View (cartoon, one colour):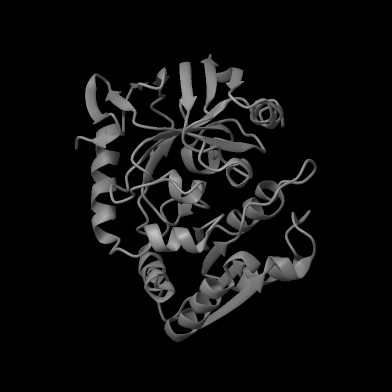
Length: 334
């Protein structure tokens, strides 16, 4: 693995300029890569500062540290390379990651939650420009869709309908110019997503569960979770493992919209060969994932919110967009 190559591609995707003021927020899980990014950032940009969240107390942190919050007032480009952290009382999505993403409209926020060295080796070694082009093709195929049907041999059979005033987002990883959407510039890139207006049917999760459950359970192909969707919400959870079912059921009761489907997305990285049990990487795999909870209203334009956001990946789906087949058993047809 080449950390140097991965960091080089991160800087390419961010489009760093010599006038940029850069902040890297990281933790003990990815120290070598964060330090390399800070070092290279200092060589390219006007300045580059590194903060380690683990130096501010036990994780998950109940709030964004004041020192980082102050530093953000003097920042043009922000890289967030942190592990997902949550317990029964505190979820850093709400207390740290969201405040980082939404601190200031002018900051170009590059989001890499849950980044690992395996992710860098798998998804950040290739020249990203081909990925940008293909993700644009998928975006063009789904933008403006009224209905998408997802079926699979695993039992998935679900319909998603979309409202014209809710935006699709191209999250291909090309952030060289102005960021595409405030707080939503994920790396590795390679997905298109939106917030569905309606969702009904059965969605079988045999890939990975999101948020902190990805680390807890990893790839769940042999122990899938089945979600029953009705009226845009998860109305029933069935799992092969009782503890997994309990964890998902508790998560989607986080608040009144935690069981509402806030995201529909298609992964566009055709070079990925396997799942890692890491949602940052796995949601870019050629497949479909949905999420319960926040629709990222500041990005999609949806008119509701939640403090939760848990992704669910189904494998080898067949996707029909307004009757046009764009994926067959997990293979892109575009």
